[in-house]
Length: 264
Ligand code: KIV
Ligand code: NA
View (cartoon, rainbow, N blue to C red):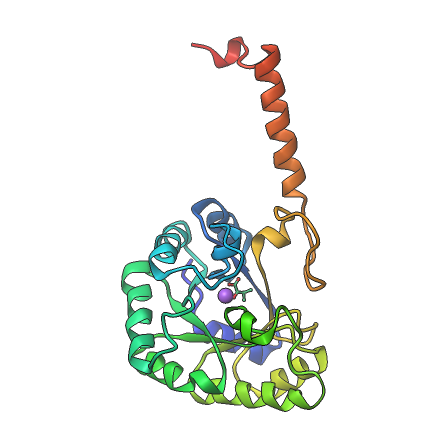
């Protein structure tokens, strides 16, 4: 077995074969997803919400994300691990972007980086790919800009579809190996996917993209409460864990645990 590489993802697009991506932030999920055959894992800046408990992705830092990247890389053998550049670590200049991407590769050990932005980040993508680091772009709704966008809103409706297409062309032209399309109408995602030679990875972008990504705690039902429309829950981990914790607490209280077989 060997790691998935960008050329495997190009070949999949040529064959018309869809693939999946999940977020991961720790060794157990990384190892399980790797063994389950998920070809790409993203150490997302969504760790801000899903690991560190911040309300948005804005506060999370490179220093907080790098140890998670290392854990995911160490726990996997086959998946390509993509490290997500957090807000504030690449916007200033192509030089800043390259410096941060190099840290993710050297200190994190990941195999590619991701950043948010279309036309306005083309120079950053060129600088990073120019140094030999694969870049996954992310356009449509970009959570790091939610205060400007005004919350979680579908991007590219009506006339603004052309904006999404222009961003897609810009990131592909700058050398990105793939592009995440977040919360764009299915018809727009379909057009982008047909036009671009590089794979598109949809989240809330309908069924016509080359790949699909979900945050793992959403996918597995660990996060409770109202999920966005694009989430499908494939398990009820919150229910399972809650039941296990209750039973443990009950058995300690009533003396059922530990039993003789747990005792030296
Ligand atoms: O950080 C993240 O989880 C992401 C994916 C949802 C694409 O950027
Ligand atoms: Na992200």
